[in-house]
Image: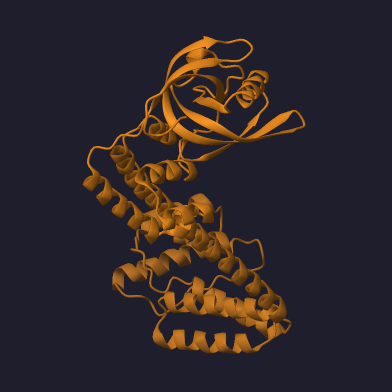
Length: 371
């Protein structure tokens, strides 16, 4: 009765589907639970087994109104209907596109007045060119495009009409619902071929991007795992070696500090010799502590740092008197030492040595001189 090449006006029971776009030339499987849909299905089964499928616009609405369906649908024939636990599992064969003219009844189910929209061909040569380009695109990346759908791959490989090719691909490939609806609204085969070529190229591009992103993520995870593995291995090695690794790190740090201190070459050589002795001694030995103290002292000395001298007898006397009461003999000797330096413009050979029991002011005098 119905075909994809003739225009027919008919009154048919209507089924409203959501979450799926029916297309001609495809087997359409539905699970029906709405009372109206089941009654429409039974009415169709009792007559010529033809129904018309319309797509619900808002898929979140449980009971759609007439205003909530697309006006382009598909006339389909019931292949089988199996009831299970209140649901009807139905397989239909999409035959031809149709346009809705009117809904004549709504109780107990919708009855639609429709007119079929046969396929249209404009330029057969152009369609052939599109088909060749499309097949080439599909074959270059068939594994990812068909994604294990061997039935779809076989249909394409066997060769079908351009009309069926576009409908089968649009129904089976993982396009979004709006994209699939575009094919339902397009009876012209040439336009559908152009859409399909563009959509397949876009799908391949997106899949390539997904692959690149996945590879980058895997690489990042691999680097993180590698770093974690090396760190854990380092911990095990350090645990096995005990203090040896720490001591080697300590020796290396001391060597860097000695070389960076700016010591005269002879003193630097002596410090490195003591460092070698220190590295060969155990930390439990008394000599090890003495050498470490010596090295720390040598590193702390300002070998390459100089300050500008400010020798002023009056200022020195004022500083000493303000910091110390008494100690006149000591303060006088310090001022004599400074006076000799001023008069001779040379460093005197004598070295001041402050001697006395704890608490008499040796350290505070040295601080006053430094100030």
